[in-house]
Image 1 (cartoon, rainbow, N blue to C red):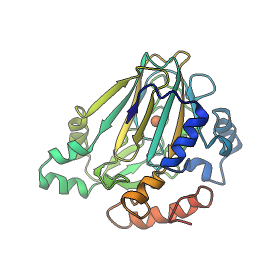
Image 2: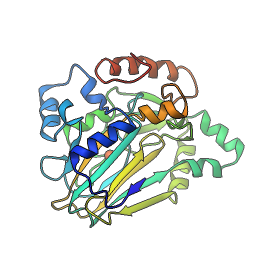
Image 3: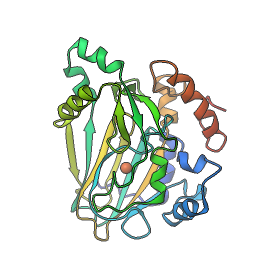
Length: 272
Ligand SMILES: [Fe+2]
């Protein structure tokens, strides 16, 4: 969703987004992060008092400068946070935020192909250099996949119950059918859209479960703010129960286990 010329400040952004859902940052819910990672998280603005809103910028921000490859946030975490909002602030209009939507691709396939995809499980690992085109690596990126060799099904559902692919290029190492996965990657190429920011204060709100995103263009003195969140309230309006991305065991149980841990630090309805 793109809201042009939002005209809002970062404080207002926080108030508004809280109505959509609670802030979540799985990294910050972990008790055992090293001081190096904790310091870095604070440096980019992450803190409970700011609603875990972080700066996305070259200086004192997450990601540094240059293009960012296709990725999802917390992508190799079985309990990834499903929503992201970006509020532009300055020098946004020479850059684009791109989206790769997987649902129309999935439904363009034959029923037999879809049931093959339904059976696929991807193995995720954190790997250096999978997001920043300039090779930069931020220690906070390790939250992209906290547990090595994490298994996550390819086909999942979004918070609104829409089926699609959780296929983030930044953490997928392999699958139980790499030939088919390469075919899927090829097929997804045309389901992309780059939004070239029209105004510095545009507001983008997007799915992080079955959609990947990227950044292209110029980033000199560019600054935007990121709020990562559960669709807590919309979720309850639509489904009346907590988000469950998975359609099969043992992933449903693993997800619930992890959410209970996260809910000790972040309020997540239904997991207290
Ligand atoms: Fe991102």
